[in-house]
Length: 356
Ligand code: NAD
Ligand code: TYD
Image 1 (cartoon, rainbow, N blue to C red):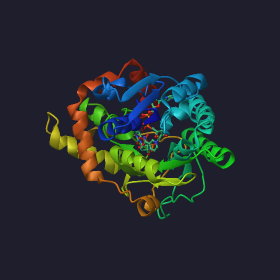
Image 2 (cartoon, rainbow, N blue to C red):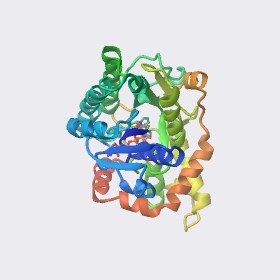
Image 3 (spheres, protein in one colour):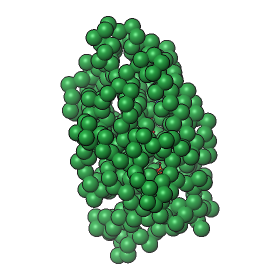
Image 4 (spheres, helix red, strand yellow):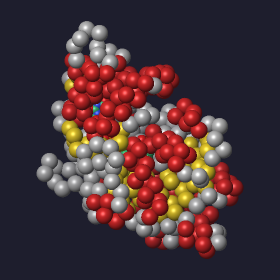
């Protein structure tokens, strides 16, 4: 048996592939374009493993995807591939439309052609799992209930709009052509191998480098944090037992204002790698100009996944953030290698002159 994972050299896809190879006897074919966010070093521990086949390529390359499907005959496709950073989508939305919208369309067409030609038993068992985000639901007020699956779509950034568009395509390919799709909407992930453009790894690497810790606006925006391996276990559970055509919200019941997250990271670093002058890393916090259109609050109601499929997160924010800080302290080479010239250009463009 084989599964095709797309975007498996990125943060969540990479963790998913590592867990899959460690925990199942099945082969995984990993299709990733290796954009700035894709990193083969994340997959170093499975490089020689016969159950991991890495292919560099684009989900929108139909001849490549159709060849991979015909050759490996996967029982499922798990689609993590996407442009994923909100700030980059503000500077340049084009790549988000190309990969997240048009790429998903191409992948659905390739998947549908393959699936429709399968023998009936394999056709019935096939699944297309689309990994989406809670950001498609828009922003919550301070006392609004968390997002349920029935919440209407109100995407506010080019990133979330492109993910919302891809979700609609996935839904339509189920209703129109019968493709057995599943969609998950997860909250903010954190953990090992996250590219240090996202909040938590950025704060860890900047703190250790003696640089400013840039908090947007007043720092009181709220996110609902989930440790990445809990997202992976949720995706496996949905793949295993989810009902085709259904959507499932995935979250950690762990809402935090950004400033609290940053202060927690500082406190852990104070404990595990104290600054040489004996002061706290919190002194490096700087408040910078806010992100345009910044969503104020996300929160996930994950009861459907818990009640129907029995999934619950294994980590709390306290256990997960400690593991995460330790991982970045223990893996300085991975961090140094991803902070290439292209990374430095991004940091200069995004943060130069942004201090308020
Ligand atoms: P990431 O940016 O770390 O990784 C994305 C991966 O996709 C990279 O390896 C990249 O090379 C690859 N990729 C990009 N365009 C491609 C293309 N056209 N063809 C093939 N591969 C391509 O992203 P992530 O944080 O791991 O997110 C993975 C998925 O999970 C995304 O769909 C994202 O929308 C969703 N998601 C992320 C979060 C989060 O907090 N990071 C939360 C909820 C949902
Ligand atoms: P991010 O990790 O980019 O995820 P998302 O925008 O998808 O939620 O950001 C998480 C929160 O942290 C978000 O409210 C923006 C904020 N943030 C900062 O305050 N400073 C930063 O340098 C970054 C990257 C994010």
